[in-house]
Length: 195
Image (cartoon, helix red, strand yellow):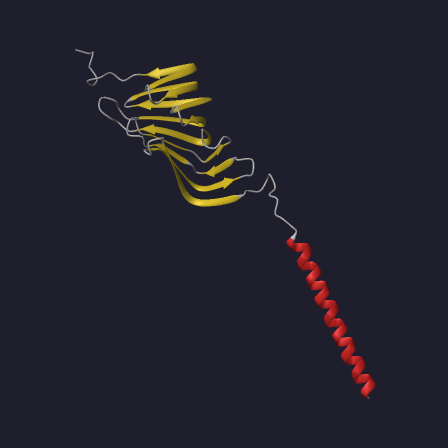
């Protein structure tokens, strides 16, 4: 009986030794593994976030908000419902929003797509203005907006439609590229031409 008990204890000790050896071998192989992100999966995700850029003097220049930011290993950032606003005190405040957005160069340019709206509040002698299109390239450093899609533009009571546009917010100029139709409402109200 004593020999059986000794054999059973030896088998149990041997099984414990095998299990411990297996556990240490697995730990050693897992510790050498590193996570290498896929190009199709984001490095990080931020929800309901705001990014503010500053000029060299530390003054806020642009604010970018989105319901979701996804950053990828190639420095591409995609956004869900982005909103870009210029906040520099020297420049007219302009607000752009869309259903989705992307930047491939660390935020120097943004590509907005889907129900893009760019608006500028009224100031001084300038009426409020609004642009509507389906895609827009935004140059944050020069405060320019460009598209090759159809554009509807509203400036006060005046409106225009065209295909392709360059909007320079600093110089306050808009160039519609082709197939332009414009309706300019008369100032000072309508006149009755009948006696």
